[in-house]
Image 1 (tube, helix red, strand yellow):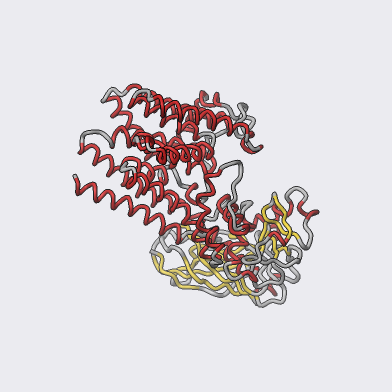
Image 2 (cartoon, helix red, strand yellow):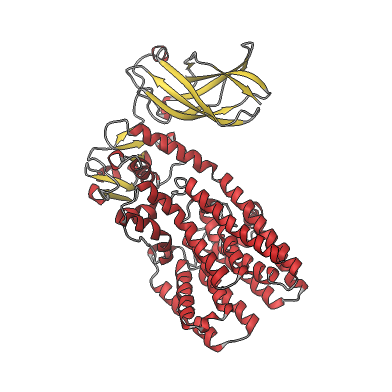
Length: 580
């Protein structure tokens, strides 16, 4: 069994090494939404950025901020920003495993980091998840009796405070830890009274310091008008909630069932009531606050504390059991699930990888144009969010501060009164915030005072037949050539006309294609349509969606353009491809 313990420890470290490698390779994709917002503030101001009193967020900003003080390149800062999240979890893991000698807690830290996280991994600046890891650390110190040493007691209370202030839901996680410790050890006046009073004080402080955002998310009537815990007694609604867990948390359900069976077998009734009751309480709380019967990044985060509860009881009830064979098998299962989750997380991020590649191409294109501020129609790009302007600042500034561009969507400009408020010396930081150019840290970012130039405003200035004579489409790369599959081809549209190719959706100009067999026979004429992303002046590289032929063989792929309902351009370039 000692050999298994050593191997399992190596596996645990190996999982964190994989997480760190992923965080470096995928650092751009992990700047999605809130993550880009907080990281930009930290780098731009060179200081911690915390909102709604969620001080735990500052922990992941330590390394990029130190990097700004050392004047490190922007790319290094962005990588450190992505790595900072893994350093946080790894630090908690090392503390549990080596300082507290609590392998169960170390396993729990890994599990709460990866299980239940799909969309959350790609927007890691989520305090509710940090609180789950710290809840593990809090209980590990509590059950180790190290709190009898004043230094550890102070540290435990600091951990408890960070956990409580991370999210209102995480008060329940602290409560579960205290209640479980009470069930295992009986009432211990000094520590139970102390942490109990500290919890009450923390709750009062949390309520008194609620921001408007937090008040909206803790109202009894729910964030949304139709939100109510009573929705759970509606069979159709309940089935949708159950579907979220069976589709996206089925590995967690497996751990839940194992823990329940084990507690029933050992007649651990009080622990089982605490286990089941806390899960049901969280489900009620989440659905009281919002309609949570569909999978989304936000709902995934709101249900995330359930991951802690299931993992907590699994590691301290099942893995900690006296039967070494059951314990070893339970550890192996948890590690296998964690590895499986890593693969699932990577696959789930495919849309974000596509989105990132598109944003990078658009940034490269705008850097060739006059001015540093541009807008693109929201209909012409994939997966536009309020964070696009921030991400464009990052992606462009990686090439040097002089190359910085602000790329926003038409929705950003049309938001509320932005059109009226935009002036030459002002830019859109995000659609809710307009900032003066002086807001930018000149060490990393630089925009000029020009107006926003639309990328989708050209019109047809001559007959289509004249355009088509000077258009070529080059095939640059393809993702897959598996028959009867859909894939993306990377193409370069070359326009040697003096006039740009219009891209507004209203003009109905689309990228498409034809397939022919080796003999020249037509296999597919009407290919799938793909919108042009921008007006093409000289050349532009973008992806196009392609459906491959139904059967294997050698085919000719002919990329083309058409005006829907009118006419094809009948471009001449063709490429011989082998479809597997």
